[in-house]
Length: 202
Image (cartoon, rainbow, N blue to C red; front, side, top):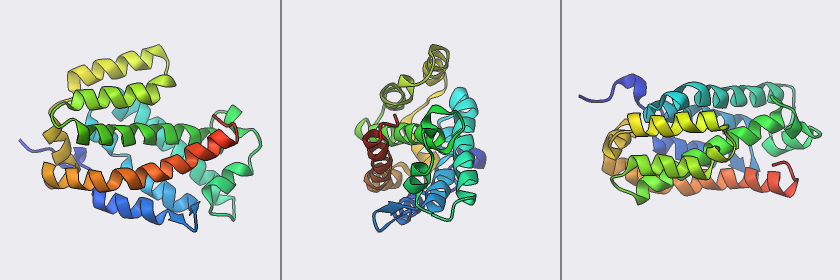
């Protein structure tokens, strides 16, 4: 049986490439375009079908997007990192835009590593998920959440081709889109990581 419409990506990876390309202009990340691109990427957690990711983690990511969007509504400057620069020591306060972007970017890095690993390891989706989680979110999650992710990966993650089919028309086409998407997506994540590192916000 094919994947149901509910667990497929609404936006194609080719559309996401354009969205993440368009959120950078004159070396600046547009807040609203960036958040729109993140919204479009969010269903990838449903595609993975690991309960802790489709539930708590996805909800946290969505909440972080909304926190930043709410702060942006009160700011006349659409530059994402300018929004963060205006907030003094915000990383120390839960639900602040600075803290929310930090956590949002950690989740984006997880997706970035996941897709990179999917391309590198043709058959083993569990390896891709486990590697991506170990390199990114596991470093910041409590042990209880780590256990749920690892258990869910063993129990619910299936064949790579099924995952790819949920991302687009066919595994071969999606793999090509992943090759194009990963560097564009990664460059946006890297801009944010670099800003946080330079300003000692991690």
